[in-house]
Length: 207
Image 1 (cartoon, rainbow, N blue to C red):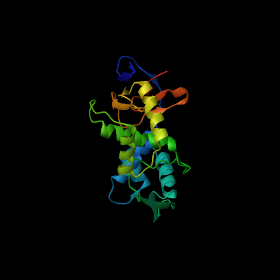
Image 2: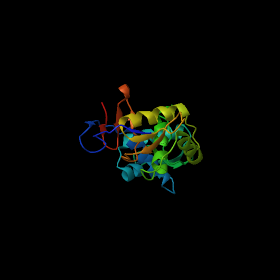
Image 3: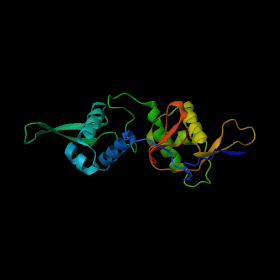
Image 4: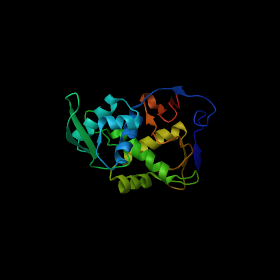
């Protein structure tokens, strides 16, 4: 049996509620720039490369260095007498470290791994996947353990928002899914009240 929740926002039939949030975009942009470099880089060079603000770049570099994800090496003093550093990745991964600016681990950011895995697995709308398939992909490619309960809750919220079609066959207790709307690389986030904010669209897609 197939089930889906049509969403006119995702189908482009009506606008959503605009919200401006840069958190995920900033981290992903900066991390991708770091991982893509073969030589250590200074803060100002990353500012120029990413077009992010100096404060944003410096804050995330310091947080990642303190947590051990990147190396921070002194480079002498700047022309104004301040200390200079160069940064390089120690623990490379496709997604940025799942910590906040205080270095606290954020399980909620597991959504980035779940969404990325779904986009890779579901290369067409005809492909049906189960939660275990997503978790196995994440473990194999990112060496991250995402709980079944978290993935189940996240997928169900996106299903209710219209991103997926679900399938129940025979005595299967857990549904399989297929992706109806791949809106982009940034993982939709679940907000209070179970509304879904999609940073790719810049809107809340359901009320």
